[in-house]
Length: 303
Image (cartoon, rainbow, N blue to C red; front, top):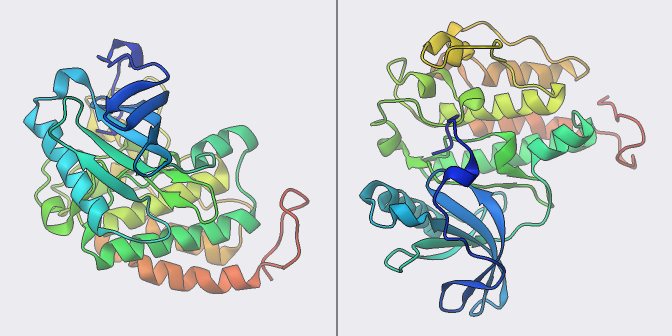
């Protein structure tokens, strides 16, 4: 689960696959890409596809864990039925192998989080089209009755088009409404993700995640930073967004964009615009960016 949790990656049981290790017949792990508590992720080669892929493999101590296998099966089913230019594609799954795994599209490009760390906030020529495309992808998920629940800079691959990845905790709206505890990545979780007693989880949670992601891309920081030495057992310290304090207006961006971000970060789910409405509000901003500017040579302005 992509929650903030302690521990080092080397402490997690691993398959120890080196370059050329076989995940399954015809699927080779070329190099590790990282992973989480339940899964290892590898750049791989799929003989049938004859292409580079990403292999998401259940860690060895969890191959018989029903919760982990259910999560993998749920993600595989969502990937099977979803198809959108901004949503990562899946190419099947093997759930009953010695190494249960998903086969995912290999995407070239850095994550948004890495780009912000390396170069700082995005300029408008990148930011506004990115915001529009992500909002369009989330509108599609909402139309399909799916909630991503982990929209954050680390799950956005900057390419042409950008891609939203990692559906490991995605749910149907019906399933999301049954969640009873915190679920997601702390800094990008809507208030109702931090405490589902506030409201049932649904598509407004993804709009909040989009707002938090855009705020981070504009300012270089998440909208509700935690205090140093916070106590993770105290909800209001772990989740400062539960205090309901409005995030400060992002500096150096057009008022229209600032208003969109603020609306996405509304505390009450019912007060956030649907993702499709966010995309509609962003579309004229995309059209009004001055053409012909080269990225990195000054910050384009919106007229």
